[in-house]
Length: 148
Image (cartoon, rainbow, N blue to C red; front, side):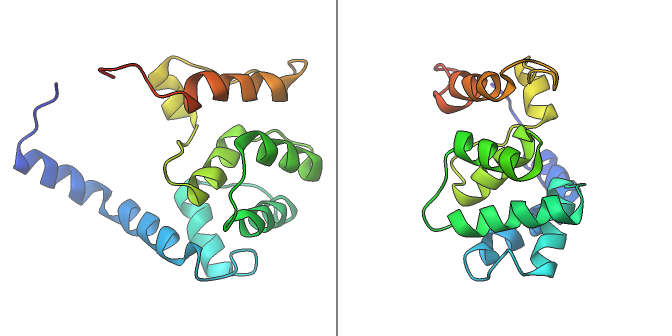
């Protein structure tokens, strides 16, 4: 068990305040605006999640986010849709899209994977999409064992 004092918690919160404010803005405004055409929202999203892709890729991404914000989308469907539209499997960014829509879902990024001792399949691996999706089912959809 981790025991932190109030002073330690307050110190950490001051260090992450800017990030928390960005996340709060993203979630508060996500359902209020058309994120596919909102440059301010997209700029904050790109900054928060460190999206460093070209304009065309981002256009597909924010269109997919907007189209699915009220009905939701499975990680596997979003991953394959982005691949069809961009030619890239972007598991980390797709997980951020899905987790923006449903905040109960996790973000898969290099920090999470590293802490869990996991890696995504390399880009040259045959059947990469299924390997990514199968890892997602095994490690990110099932609840963790008790005590973790």
